[in-house]
Image 1 (tube, rainbow over the protein chains, first blue to last red):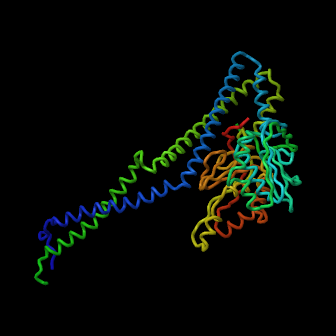
Image 2: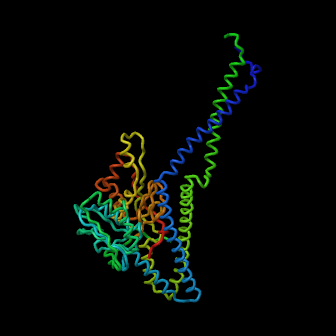
Image 3: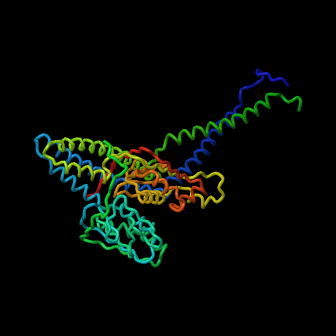
Length: 233
Length: 244
């Protein structure tokens, strides 16, 4: 049979109705598939919990950043004043230096905080995780068994023992951390937190957190030398 | 059958064609509407989550802007500090001490030889045990922590991860699939730049007796763990805050 386009008739009414129904059906099927997956993903309790956690971390971080902006603006005003009125400006420089010395760990510092003692079995990586947790909660300085921890400090195994910056530590292990004592104590002891994880691995491990009104951390005993790194403007 | 009019078979053909086109077009319209119009009403259970997502986005944006502002202010302060130092009223010792400590606390950009370590999730293809694979083929915050710890042990003097400078208060954490360093999101691949004696740093990284788990997972699960010596690396200064 030869195809003759003139023989093609206009689509019948039932065909058009089928067409419209099919569009609606397609719309509904795809819509249903998409919305079910999307709602499932969005309303997943874990996802919500994580988002909430992210919001709280960001809120805290942004608040600290805003405070830092204010401090820097104040410092800028102090320098501008010293330059404008021909003041020595030494006091501003000295106060900056004192702040950096505190942060560096090369000076002894005092303040409130917590003492965290781990008795019994513990791994070097668990002490590393504890240090990371303390830094995450927010600390101004930390020492482990009376040795100041600095930015490039390492916690490594030495045979069956644990060493901080190459120095073998004698158990029990005690972190003294300066910071908000209440916040540190609460965060460390929260349910499902790092202390519980240590207890899960080593049920015999005893971990205690004690708030301290006044802790003194010694200065770092080593030297922070730069042999390869050079400052660039 | 031979005498059946051809129009009838065309009508049937139309029905089938329209049915297929209809479903496809309907689907396209639905996709279009869903993807462009996510506007839940107040009673919609997804609203709270979407708002949280938007809050995370806007706060991340604010964090970025604040950190840029801090970087800019620190540069301006440094320039004014220099002008104060250059006047004869300030002792040279004080200026030198100030610069020394700024470098130690990570507030100065630094450059020098070292290594670049790249960490990233492994590839999934051709691996049998998927459950085991999922955990072992993914980079965790503890892997980054261990690598940084090992780089310091190898004598690194300064480290940054995707331009986040590691300082005394830096923590490295993971919230599900997001890695946070200095409370900032860090994407993959993770590029760890460490300034120090490059041969020693590379030797520590490549030694199969160290970072044993990373070496095993690189071999078994195609985890990306690459080490490259570099003659001149540049690390940006820390842009966060110190709680003092």
